[in-house]
Length: 374
Image (cartoon, rainbow, N blue to C red; front, top):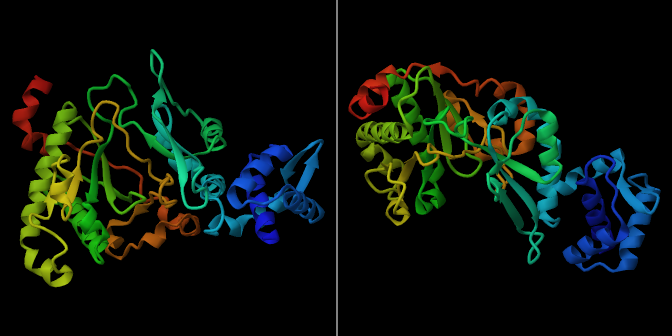
């Protein structure tokens, strides 16, 4: 109990921003909530940490030392520790490595944020997420990030997940990015080989874009159990509705290809999926429990989508870019923040969004685009 109390005090101090100090009552309230430690036990823990050079007194308050912050590393992956503290600690470490990579996707546009705090009923197993799309006042006050200082201001306020709007101009009539969100129904997602099938379908979508429409794109893991395919166009497809229609068209072409593999997939995956395998119907989730959704719903006014390199607040995994040529070998462990940082030199060039011609897609959608282009 004594070591666990000490560990909890250390991790609590370690998630504070540099030079941030806290008083004893704050430490007592949080640590007592997490493990029921007494005042005396917490005082002893603080004395030990100070004696070892891992914490320090600052007048009547306490703060972490750099050695203490390093000593807390293993605690960030200890399932017995407060989950929100673990996520915040990892975020502060991780974003130092990827700040230059994530900034192009979040600067100068409205950004939704997820901040994580302790769940009062279960601080060890759960977090209390605070979703922030904009301040609820008139006129709306959106979250904007203009530089690294702004990014770190949000991170130091417990923001770990960054979800930018798909259009930088709040009054835009079409999105800046073309994004297909590939997500499976709950039964397929939880099936033993469900993730393998999701990867195969994602690759098929990627190939349809390139082979049918000459659209070059990038793939990233969602941070959960799905993937997203992103690209940018030299000219817009049309208004937002045209992007929805494009994904519906792509879904039909993907399914035509998959029809030729139904027998092969039954041999490999058994009865975990329904046919047709894919759908673009974002409603009626009960009808797609064993199907894979090509989701267009973020491509709307004030639609938002998780940024490449962001931490997924639920899983703690990274929405990491994936090499299309290696997607079938991709494993969820590769999205662990430690693995991402370790492999960053191999990964960092995988999400340099190409600009593709939209001409072939616009031609395929021409009847619905006449009104837009006049």
